[in-house]
Image (cartoon, rainbow, N blue to C red; front, side, top):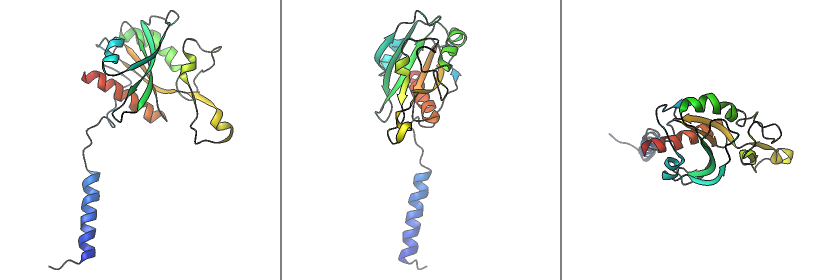
Length: 183
């Protein structure tokens, strides 16, 4: 059987393409956790610090009903890129759900309340704001948007997650929580 050079080259290229397409990636880039999970775990901020979470600010939670603490900081993902998070700790997951979610849902996503005068919990509101992408032009480039586009309730912690869009924010939440779980 005689194979010409073009056919041989085509077979090599196709083998390479299909071989790479089926490669199993072992990072957490496709692993996502449920919005509410790990209900029996109780975390402290020390658990987050032990996986590399760096605290920029600790917030006064005296007006954040039932919260034990809230922190703004960052964590470097598996690509060594720092991602901003806000972590709120409650005595239990049930208290996080009953008392904390209303405050979180107010400050995430496209309809986030970002004015101090309109926010239910004013502490740290400036840290929940972000400027739009620098690639935008005109007045769109100067508009303020919510920094956090998603959150998870993981054990007794509510984790607010930043990202370029909702899917990145969701993945960032999962990456942090799964790292916490594995330690």
